[in-house]
Amino acid sequence: MKKVFTKRLISAILTTALIGTSAFALFGCGKASKDTSNDAKVHITNVSYDPTRELYESYNKIFADHWKAKTGQEVEVTQSHGGSGKQALEVANGLEADVVTLALEYDVNAVRDAGLINDGWINNFENDSSPYTSTIVFLVRKGNPKNIKDWNDLIKDGVGVITPNPKTSGGARWNYLAAWAYADKLYNGDVSKIEDFVKKLYQNVLVLDSGARGATTTFVENGQGDVLLAWENEAYLSIKDHPDEYEIITPSVSILAQPSVAVVDEVVDSRGTREVATEYLSYLYSDEAQRIAGDNYYRPYNQDILKEYSDVFDLNINLVTISDFGGWDEAQKTHFADGGIFDKIYEK
Image 1 (tube, rainbow, N blue to C red):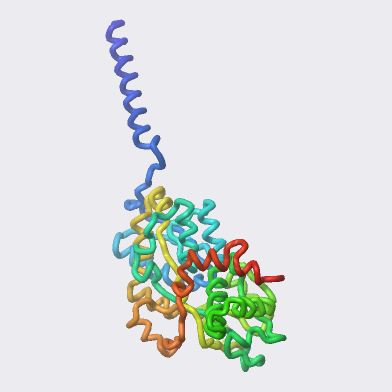
Image 2 (tube, helix red, strand yellow):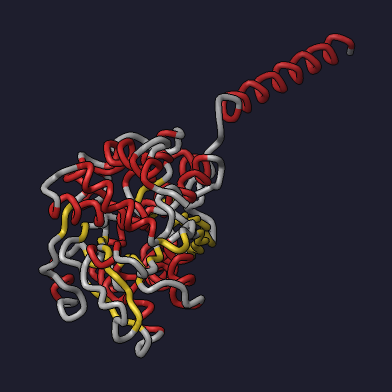
């Protein structure tokens, strides 16, 4: 009897050790990925920038229908919005995002540099992972009482300018670079004169909000300033909501603004949401989603669909690109990093 008991005890100990070893093999070497493919509902979070609220409210509905038809699974998308640079910092510091849809490549790179997005993300989707584009225009009050027609009018005495802070807002960085491009052409590359021009412009800025939507609120709702430097889509939304109060002025030079999208690899692999997150961004290039972008005043990447909106957008606008500034890494280092040109020229 004693021998039988001893054998059973040894067997139990070995079995327990084997189970423990297997559990360690499964869970002890890092985070376990949860497979959500068989769940009745899957949840993902899209961390985006300020003016995309309406776009993704519409898009999330059609994507939910698409995902349900494709997989039989329901999907719920949580949205987060704010200044693009601030949003990137939040994700890098732990805000859990399955995807980011930010205002520019540099902000996605900040999340990549935090170890959350794999190298080469920009090649994962078409058009440098930019499914829609925009540009920078002026929103002025109806009748344009200050007769603002181009960038040079923004440095005149008595003109109140509203634009977000380039330190926190992606749209603000596009605004700044568009103004710089105009001055660069005006002064044939004379950096001293260009800096002086941009400095005068920012001396006329009344409020530096943290994001583009905050700047729109300052101009439209709070009635401050004579001109808002705005994303094209944001300006059109203001016209739509207040058709008799504002008008859009297209400057002679602006910039091709390319918002960027990326899957947050570290998060989707941890949560088991890679498939749905990838499809979420991929479906932005579908004809249905491209028209959703156009209806929300973003320029569709699909050129045939873009032409459908030729009565909305000025398709002949003179646009510089970020490559004219040496790419985003160079532009950030030169203009927006601590101690860069913006810090040098901006005075409260």
